[in-house]
Length: 92
Image (cartoon, rainbow, N blue to C red):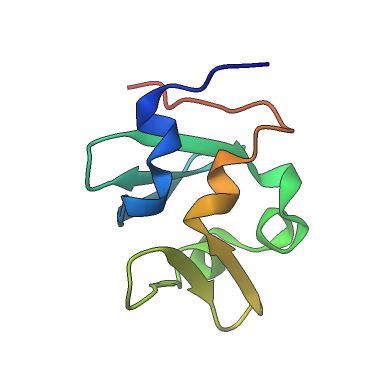
């Protein structure tokens, strides 16, 4: 069994503070200061969107999701912790 860090076990109580992109990934920064990203290839609507469309989003009222009205796309914070896929970390 793979042991997850206590930080990752507590994603349920984290809130999204910021969303940003580079050429290949979407990143969220949580209120705990963690930055985690996923490849845009996992989200075809975002991958095929223009940069302007990608940045036209709203963070949900509970700060646990991101919504793109124009793209009809929603991502939950939970989806950024999908351990069946390789996680990506921001190059800061």
